[in-house]
Amino acid sequence: MSTRPNNIEAQYYQSIVQNSLQHFQIAELIANKSNASYGHAIIHVTYAIEEQIRSTFSFLKHQGFNIEEYKKLKKINSDHHFKHNMAFLITILGILLPLIQKSNIITKFINGIKVYQKLKTLKSDNSWWAKVENNRLQCIYVGMNDKIISTPGNFSKQDYLEAKKYYKNLVSNSNKIKKLINSYNTYKLKDLQKYINKKEVKEMIRTAISKIPTEQDRNKKFKSYPKG
Image (cartoon, rainbow, N blue to C red; front, side):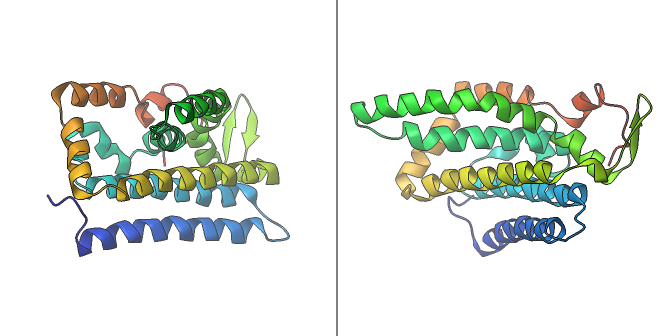
């Protein structure tokens, strides 16, 4: 595989990015109506998030990173909950990678403080990402749990604005990763690929991926909504 995307690979990647943007634009149209149904707007933000995360992995794959070697990553195209958890991971990487790239020791120290401050905010971020799939289902279906009926109309403007914020953050952090990799020349990119292909590194990645929750894991906790 070449280290840079060919025309059809680049077209596929751009199509996913465009689809993500179109979902978000639809969400904005719904949310800005006078009688807005914010639950139905949130579902499109959620799909915008899912396409954004797929675009990131499409980008990595066609930069020569052998992500297909990790079988569980195939769920990035089919498992909603897995995609949401991967989105949180990309958000973390987007925050940390630019901060740890600097070589100056003083800059590293200052950035270390920034990393610590950023990590303190990730606990609340994790709480939001953990409930995205349950919210997705509530935004599609009418459900009932303990005789309490839930509909897409239960979601507020504030809920929508929060979802929008996380989508924007994901796009920003995803772009940071893409920009960083695009800045590498061919030799530096190959060095990075060589490092990631080391047996011990691949095993670390495989172990980390194996711990990322899937829809099957989620369904053990939530049973009040249909699968979809």
